[in-house]
Structure formats: C-alpha cells, structure tokens
Image 1 (tube, rainbow, N blue to C red):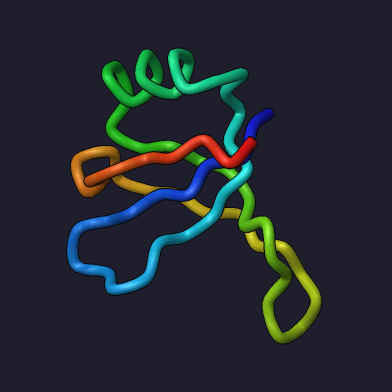
Image 2: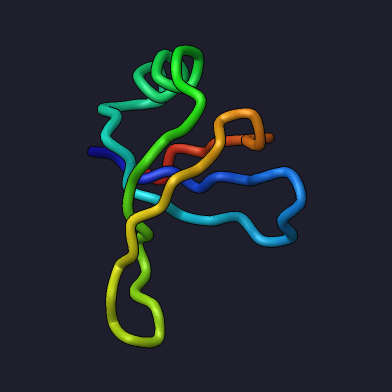
Length: 67
C-alpha cells in the first residue's frame, strides 16, 4: 500500500489516496491493465471515515508518489 496524490480530469483539486500498489511502477502497471483503481481516502470525511474510492484510470492526468 502506498499513498499517491492523483489529479483527475474535470476536478479542480487533486485527491490523495492509499492504493494497493507498492510504488509508482506498480501503479503504472495496474493502471495500464485495469479500467478502475480502488483504494481509500487518506483524510477522513466529516463523519471521521476514510472512505473507499474507485477511480477510472482514463481520468488520471497525473499521479505523484506521496512518500
């Protein structure tokens, strides 16, 4: 599991997600073979829950490894 900041087409603000990828190379591999990525938000919502997220890989403009 690694943390990435993801910029999506049609969104003004990037999202930061924990994804089941060891590093950027694993994210590239998974995004190249899957239509969607699933992970968890790193910041809790107003209810204090880190929600699960599904992102369409064709909407990803840029992914930045957070650490």
